[in-house]
Image 1 (cartoon, helix red, strand yellow):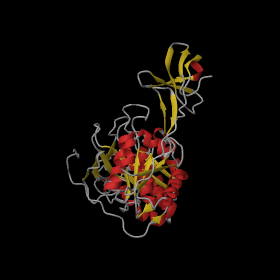
Image 2: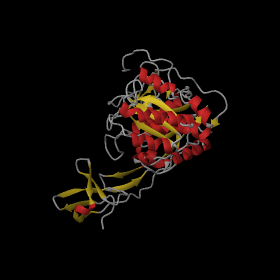
Image 3: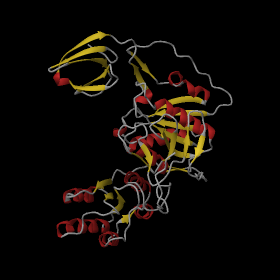
Image 4: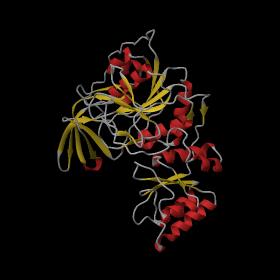
Length: 421
């Protein structure tokens, strides 16, 4: 029987494939690392035979202990799962786990000259499987490490921005920096960006007095600098580019390179006052995207099941409620709001802001109590409303959803060219 790390030949009904067997929890799909470096998924039902060509060599080499150095700051790297926490050495076929600080420094040796590194695993889930329960666990772990100089959270990229917003709302007046990093290239590939993000995040923590939650990812497709991005104004804008994460309706907080040179772009207000932790998130919130022929039954389901609805409207916040065919949606929203439901309106345009008075139909939505959320991102509004309903009374949540709490809303949107460094 073939094991992860083995070099194998997979014979299917149509073709033969050579590669290294990758670990997976899928019951339906087998994954191979091909010689060209790309991953291939093969449906198990189509496989006729698997031949083991060379067994994996599990690395048992002792990892040198990294001793803490006086004068260096102390950083904890927290893992939530994904490729940043483990890897397969596909050159040797050896399976190597990066589960300790010593093993991590072995693969990213630059870290030992920047800070004293320790590690801890929070959970082990793919980012698309993240739930509010994981957010609460993260908050508890962060609270445990407030005596450190900073924390770095390794996270899958798909929902990384959601987590950044969630932690930003849950931890008010956070007294230390918490930087969330991900990787657009898996750590088993030579082109992996994981190491650069860890190095730049560590440098930023040690070279600045920043406090709060932020994201550290590639600023451009080049391996020159990383951007420190605002937690509540950032979105993943590309499926695979290294510079997939962009600040929307905002600019990066700063740029940092692997040598530790920091260039501030946006003034950052340091949190003041005592740390306030509100880590509950209500599951009774829906995010609905408006499209042509939007189904009335979908809105009806949401109004019956959820306490709050975030509308990702078109343009300035439009939704189909004007024509006779769509009047039932308008009446449905009106009843929902009268019965205590909260409707927050954002725009799928992302850049720019919604407006409750520019058009007659927008005024009609505002008149029945729909709340226009300025330039807040739909995803941030979704996380914020879930957080508000989890920690405040409903009327308080209604008052706070369109109020700037963590930099999620800017005062105005002046025209400016896209930020390029």
